[in-house]
Image (cartoon, rainbow, N blue to C red; front, side, top):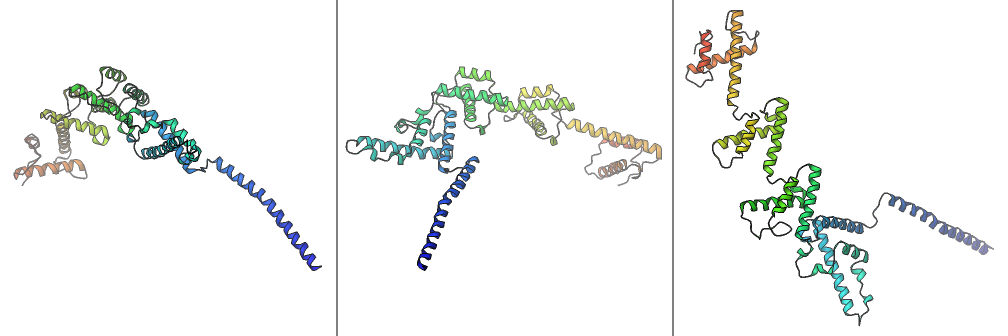
Length: 378
């Protein structure tokens, strides 16, 4: 009886265990699918390597659209390393495929694990962007580059888009290939103007000089050949706006970039007057500045303002003497005039001692004429 009872208990335990094992997969499966769905909703990356491959492939497509080739020697950074890596892998695939084809009479092609060397989905993606057997020919990689006319026109179209967005054709270096192309056009133009260019001179895409036809095309677009002059003209226009607002061209240094530019124009003007060849002031620029009343020599104006202030203080001194009957101005009456009188006496004493003094003869005579210097001793 006890054995049967124990057997029944064991069977009941087994039934419980069987029921537990039977229900768990449903619970786990439901939770698992729910978690997968939530992770997919937030864009969770399950295969990091595949995601990285797609990102680099997308960068390569963009590079090819812009430059017309996929030559890693003309790339920078990680993209060039990535292309070289998959070039090697693609070559291994081609070698294995060729070996399988050659030995097909003795060895079944299926025995060669081409999928293990390069998965079919990645091979097709690489071939769509330009990977092919011709990549490993002994011919130079220049075969990938588009012909000269097409590449030049492609860059020109990019420049049109840049101007439409920014309003000018001065492309900075940070713009990459377009910036390099723009600088190349200026370089070729300089060679053409100096007649020192040779048939060996070349741009970054191809050889050859800048033709008259292309020069006309660029001129119609408003291409900037002299960037320095263009920048000068831009700041000159800022000066015109400043004059229109403040009715003067003497911009203080505290005003920022325009104030520094105005200061530099005076420095360039001085070097121009001395006949220095390296001066950045030109006759055309000089005429443009003079036409708007630009003040190159502020010395006279500064001296004139100082004389005007001195005469004003002298007039105040005369009024004080008329009111109080003395030239001994009290500080409590007029602190400014008090300090000015003390400064005039100190300058006069320094002059009597034979030292340097800012009191010139004209001012000295004016002070003596009213009797201010009477009684001043060394």
